[in-house]
Length: 121
Ligand code: SF4
Ligand code: SF4
Image 1 (cartoon, rainbow, N blue to C red):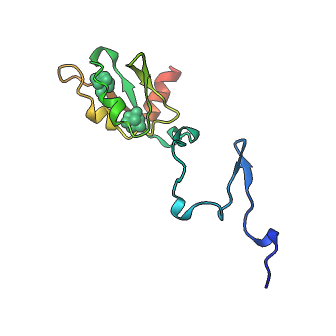
Image 2 (cartoon, rainbow, N blue to C red):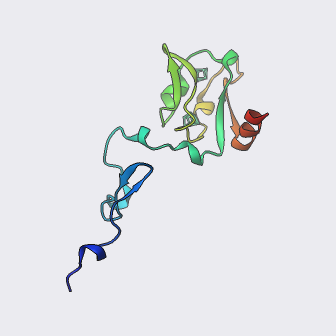
């Protein structure tokens, strides 16, 4: 029995302004084969806690920037200035690694619901 193009499975569709691959084009195991494409995917929307930077406790050691798996720590002139919340997944590694100043951490993890309430107040 020959399969027509229509019956060959879902065809690529446009989603969020881009043509998305059908399931037949997705690599086995959903592996990501292209390098450097993390910035195309906003991974911040499944975060349940977010890092909040406390500048007065920051010694600019850049441990947070080095350890962040999503390159979501923002730098300006080689110094930390905050986080890219569109890509931060809220893993908490930055807060865990942050030495802070004299034991007072410069990053604390806050529940996303709490952060949203604070921004609306
Ligand atoms: S919580 Fe995780 S993803 Fe977000 S800035 Fe810290 S290390 Fe990066
Ligand atoms: S790890 Fe902590 S102290 Fe070091 S740069 Fe990041 S926020 Fe500042």
